Amino acid sequence: MSDGRALAREFLEQQKLLGGESVILPDGPAPGLRPGSVTSPSSVVELTPGASPGKPEGLPPVGLSYDPPTSDLFSTDPVPQAPSLAAIAQLVAKCTKCRLCEARRHAVPGEGADDARLVVVGEGPGRVEDETGRPFVGPAGELLTKILAAIELPRERVFICNVVKCRPPENRVPQYDEIAACVPYLFRQIELVKPAVILAMGGTAAQTLLNTKQSLGALRNQVHRLRGIPVIVTYHPAALLRNPNWKKPTWDDVRIARRFID
Ligand code: URA
Ligand code: SF4
Image (cartoon, rainbow, N blue to C red; front, side, top):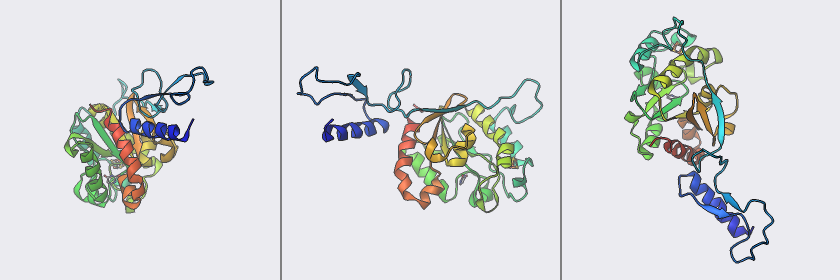
């Protein structure tokens, strides 16, 4: 393949990933060459990374799938049976299931539309979130609000929450047992909202939602599933504030998530 064609193919692939038109380029010699001189067994290559039958065109390849247990009929645990997001918020406000309850000023259950098409999941409340009881309202939150506005999703139309609902001291990464104690709230919230897509921001959210230890880098650029709901993994906005080079890839990820919404 000539350099020009290779470049064109790469460009079109990128465009398609970002939501451009579906384009099919014959995988053979450039037009004008004699037909029959092609040795490649497939004469047409669809410009879709990881394309497979039944999958919307232009999306990244299929990734992991995780189905955490749901409430069983005989359980007396109120969390998986909470009837509403408000009921979850009440349980979270008085929760003492892990040590993070000790230093919190406010628990931060999450907020947004209870029929949101997009659920955004971060790691845990920071200082401003702990002070206000609201998710993503500090500097990282301001950036998240801008990212959402850019895909024409006002914050109010999204449900925004975190893996752990109480602030870890000094904003350290939540520990495994803290996540294990808190994650039933998150799974119930997702079950109640029934979004069309979930955006996992940062490694903690991605690894928790997909029950994996794989790195963020390995998990990006695939369409994972949580109980059948697509999960798109991207950088955490706080990481973007430290490393603006990640803005472009984050942009790409968010636009992929956007495609599941309409
Ligand atoms: N970072 C998070 O992960 N969540 C917040 O709510 C705020 C900052
Ligand atoms: Fe409860 Fe979660 Fe807060 Fe721990 S972090 S006390 S499990 S609400």
